[in-house]
Image 1: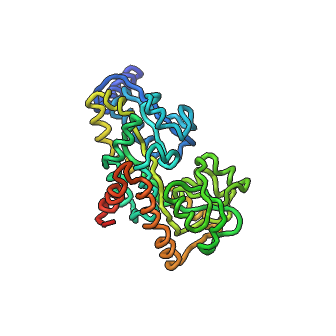
Image 2: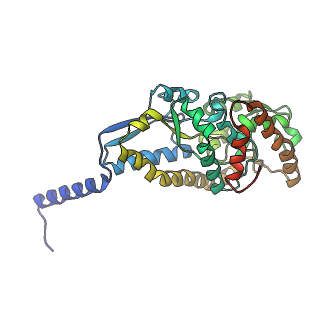
Image 3: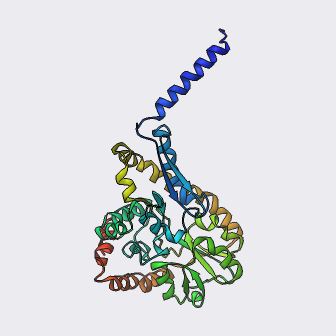
Length: 343
């Protein structure tokens, strides 16, 4: 066996580092830093933007860094669109129902019982809504453009106290829900509140709210709700919301052409990573929830009754509320058309 001296080892290491650098710098470009405004901690919800940050750094050899700022360090969660509007940072995640008046057309994605039967339809619907002129126009007012959705799964509820074994048992309960999901729960007699995600644990613990709707299962566990809950709904699935990764329009326009192309090239990887994060968490969380909490499951008849009362009637009320402001009916029709259905 031939022995390699210290000088030889150093030379090999240098060659290795050079090769690694050459592989990493697939995209040549200037030194650039982007800041991303996030709230809460690292979790499944942030998996997509984390993957974006990693891929951009890797493929530019570290020349373009996308720095993730958690915990509302750059902006409060309800003010990320405001931050983008003044270029306080180059990118952010935001949730539509945190500020419905800022993004009324995007609130379409909170409507109850949309046909998001699987991950493929989840994506088709959100991508189609992002492409709708009404959504593009309203976000442009905030100097914002969507990049990818966080593709939230359907919501379910975790709660404390007596489980709502029947739909009638929701009457009088205070529930954390926003947008169309809140309207649907009102039909059942519940009182919605739109507390931010970081406020919910204390609300459930202190009894100021009885139940919380979050994307199931990752968000409930991320915010430690099982620690203060007694039960969960397994198949209510009243709807979801939308929390995209958004860019400053000005920052995106200022990018070199090769960096804009890079964002397009890595998008599929970012989306796949985001969705897989939820799937992975469900495999871990569901057994824990079944063991720790009381499962509430509704019959097909109960769910059909709920859908009849809180599905199309709630959507039609939303359309009426927004008539004259933008093509609300057209946005809803786009949602169903995206998955081959007619509204």
